[in-house]
Image (tube, rainbow, N blue to C red; front, side, top):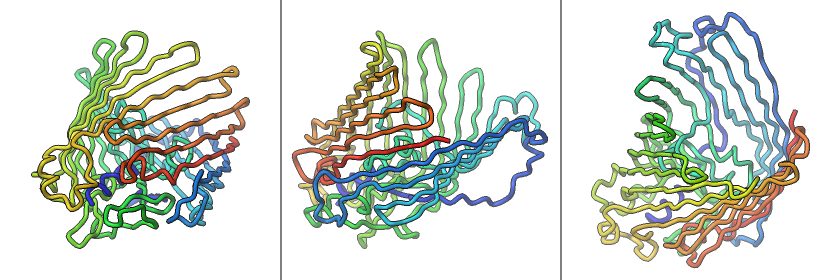
Length: 433
């Protein structure tokens, strides 16, 4: 049972976001007396995707069927600005019309709100619905505990939709000794994890894949805010960073004694470094996942604490051809306690999950065509996920994209193999205005 929920950490939380403002902003306090510029832009998109083989527990072959319109608007003031991005779309897989506010933020120098003199010039603030990200991984996230949308990622939507929005306040400080980012998210924002709506997932209780999925009831959702912090500094040509997070697992990786899924509490501490090396870029990152609801690792319904490591390297091999590789390791603490108390030991993960990734990106035809191949392969689980895509944009006004999401493996219960019936082909056409 613990394995099921650990697999869900890859994947749906909020499919539509609603922005709530408690009090209107005082525009004059933010230095908004003048309005020198504002801009409108956006796009309309038609996207379609289908399974390469049928899924016996999902009653549709469609994996993607979007008709989408996005509006972007931003306006600059003397010492601040407003940015707004919203998607209105029809999801043909679920037969639902949705509105997602991806960005509605007020941002600027803290001095625009309160005159703090020279001190205030070192602080920027960004408040509202926003996309947040940090860390060094490519499709692999250790210290980036901000919401992700893995349903969109698996279905073949644009990579932009892998990052989900949250209503947060971000304060950034720029000092001689280091730079600091502090993010407060008053209402916990989970991932958009795989829950059976689009793709089935393996259940050790059933011994097979199941769908449709589940929703987490309100009492099992965290009521406390999320806090995230990054301290970073460049020394020479190397950027170093330290991270901290307090909140909860981003997908419901735990069960109550009554078998109800919930988001167990989590603290994360980590560090990273990225530096030029040889003819490319080398990055290393680590994170300690402190599962505070299971300090001893003996609670079978809660994930164990883990140490996670990432080592990556990227280099342009020849003109317009870039390659990268990553080694990622998840080491489970108190593994013996996990096995001794497990309810389904035959489906437990390995003590250490080892994952390699490889990316090749090639730009041709005067860089109007971009070809991408990204492969995840786990030597410990003997499974993987190959993501292929091509983006063609001969003019600025439109882009045609297509590709495949291919899952493979040996054991049905392993992390990627469970999604084999989700393997799909997709195509998207986007027109910008």
